[in-house]
Image 1 (cartoon, one colour):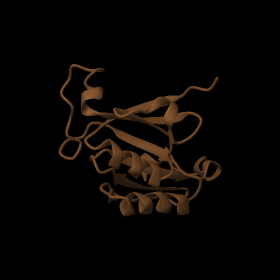
Image 2: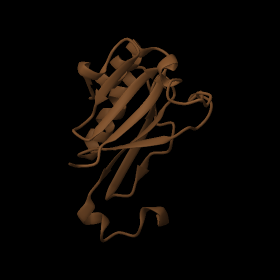
Image 3: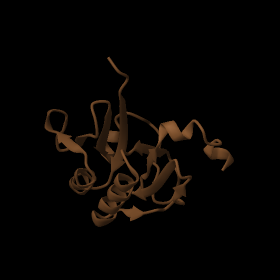
Length: 142
């Protein structure tokens, strides 16, 4: 069985957050969703659990960070092409997100952009030509 990732995000408006993630390409799994949580499926291995603040507090005693004013985590999704990167960021913007809070990245063999969801969670979307990347200098050196 492949490793899976479940990203748990606290959200202030579950209905709005669910609609946002559906708009950028995730599917809601009703089996693991209720009035306190939405299980959003990006792939067979990537899930985002949108949790109301009350639900999120059941898992941690720590204060919930305001993602609009502080950094909590940087999440990155892969895309199948440069156009897919632009398409996802465009959908995020059209659905209430903020496009490109971080710098665009274009190394030829690798292309990335970013968006914030309505709660301020920071996402990158990245495409990479793996074959070309093996013949290029490291992106960190570019």
